[in-house]
Length: 267
Image (cartoon, rainbow, N blue to C red; front, side):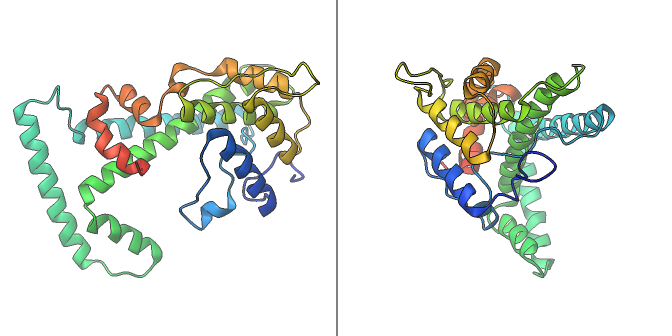
């Protein structure tokens, strides 16, 4: 553990990352397979310290920025994602023309661009595989990631900036809530927690996994208290698959986003 507080996710030893990924992967029923070199050195769940703001003013500046980014992304999706049930023939025709026009300009732009870095190559891949479609996938991915960060900022606001003092074992609560949300998204139902009659240890898969995560991260806190609190914080949005949750948030029928979102999710 770093001297200033809970773990920096980039400072975890490789064996701890492997152990975390094995425990969490077993809980959610899928192996963690990083798609990038960077992903090999980060755990499947975020283990960073939640509150990194020195003041409420600093916190509010970030909260406002995240909310503004999400509003802008939603506005973009409103403009360029088709809605089969609501779009008029005129709007459908406009979207077709717009897609062709943007794609044509992207092709011309790609021909003029030289490759000087890995970033240039990544951008070229988007151009080559369909700029209009590819950027829609990126926008949806960006929205999902910002939405997740906004949820954590809201948690921080309730725990840090609306009370006179910080609650005990907040890091334990943070990790428990992240694990509970991941479990819920993967399974479509909340985790459960209980204690075994045969001894003072958890009796459910979620509880045992959380206990092991606490051990790996050297968190000295009550697993029972953290798990019970985290499960109580879950909302209906936490129980939805990310694609369906996003579609519902934006007011679109699920099927209008599924071709793009499923491609983005690799499904």
